[in-house]
Amino acid sequence: DKGNHRHFMAKEIHEQPEVVGHTLSTFYRPMTETVELPAAPYDWAALPKVTMVACGTAHFACAVAKYWFEQVARLPAETDIASEFRYRNPPLVKGGLSIFVSQSGETIDTLTALRLAKEQGQHIAGIVNVPESAIARESDVLYPTNAGPEIGVASTKAFTCQLTTLALLAIAAGEARGSIDADERKRLTRTLAELPRLMNVALHLDEVMGEVAHDLAKARDVLYLGRGAMYPLALEGALKLKEISYIHAEGYASGELKHGPIALIDENVPVIVLAPSDELFDKTVSNMQEVMARGGRVILITDKTGAERAGDSAWHTIVMPDADPFVAPILYSIPIQLLAYHTAVAKGTDVDQPRNLAKSVTVE
Ligand code: F6R
Image (cartoon, rainbow, N blue to C red; front, top):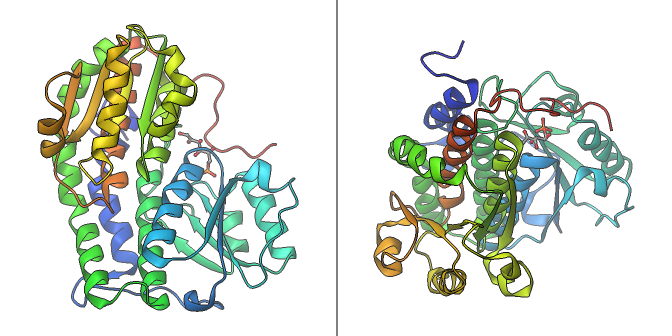
């Protein structure tokens, strides 16, 4: 049932404030502002390393979480794509935790990677949306996401729920390891508790995104740029656009621009810049100016302060609600999803069933 939406994808994008709220309440206790995780055979304080493995969009959730585990928990974190991980014979640190992230819980590469890590004595945790799936069953500890059934082939609400769960794990790990104190834990959990409301505000960009998408739909190639935890989000934005609108798109770390991709820039290659006004903002603005100096057209997605600091030189400026940098990757998922969705609608492609793609990839 699509409710009053044209596509499952639109319905699932708009469900995010609610399902992110459900996912939060799995482990977050608002009265005490604590994170309570299920019993586990490992102690976050003693973990030498966390290794996160997944495919596609779920892998980009892991790539965001790497920044969180490193910054909040000072825990060495590695991520890999399951199809690479399973064949590269990785030297896994003894006593380490391997986390497998999957909406379906049936992705064959991720499942096989899990079995390999298990054989090598790793602790196994699953972040899975389908509780009766193979990855859920074979994990030592399950951290379920509560996104509800995701029907659209392009993952949207499962992604933000995976991010929410990973953010809670990073906070719990940080507290266990003493890298954050109770005040900082409260501050971080509060930013998560605020998310559903901020996501609702961001969903009001639906109409504006429809207008921007009208312009974007004419492009043949698009670049997405971001720094820090917004870099994996740039990768996710590019993946979402290409899979449903069939426009060629690539994501880059903003700082990599001058190491190659800048050669592509001209008036025909729109550049989408994901840049909340954090401490790296000025660097991103200078990357933006490099793009514009070469005739490139920028779609800047930022907050009010960022929009003021950037001036009105961008082709389009999308103003997001203010948010703590910690939760920005979750919040900024909304505009990139809306942009991909509306671009696909403008192009008339099959949004819920893109060509050549399957919802669950159970063959190699
Ligand atoms: C992209 C998308 C895919 C999946 C990937 C992993 O929108 O949906 O990239 O994220 O196939 O699927 P799961 O999470 O089921 O393991």
